[in-house]
Length: 115
Image 1 (tube, one colour):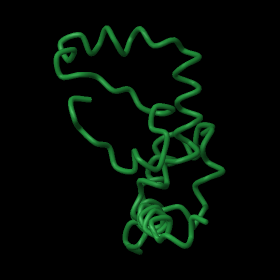
Image 2 (cartoon, rainbow, N blue to C red):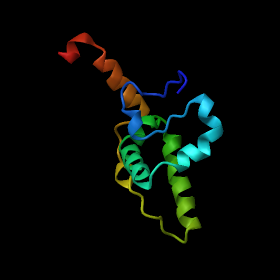
Image 3 (cartoon, rainbow, N blue to C red):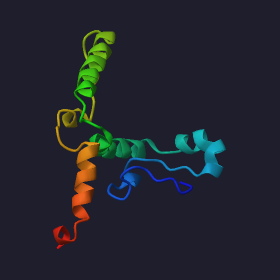
């Protein structure tokens, strides 16, 4: 809020997976977040699972190697298994990174592509 723009907010419906809090309401942040119903949180998490890769930069091989290492460490810390993750089906996608989102947005700005 308060004139702060979130990346891709003009492309993605960020209201489906974010909570915006005005600067003046920051002292009540815990109260505001705690008042969100569990069903709404579940809906927002499901929506975020659909778009999280749009915020990830995948152009660097090192990030993929780090992801594998971090997940491996996480799995080892939990006795060799990972807990269920509702968004895991999107983890293997190679499309939809932050770069792809920017390119798609730029392409949509070309006049003849919107006809």
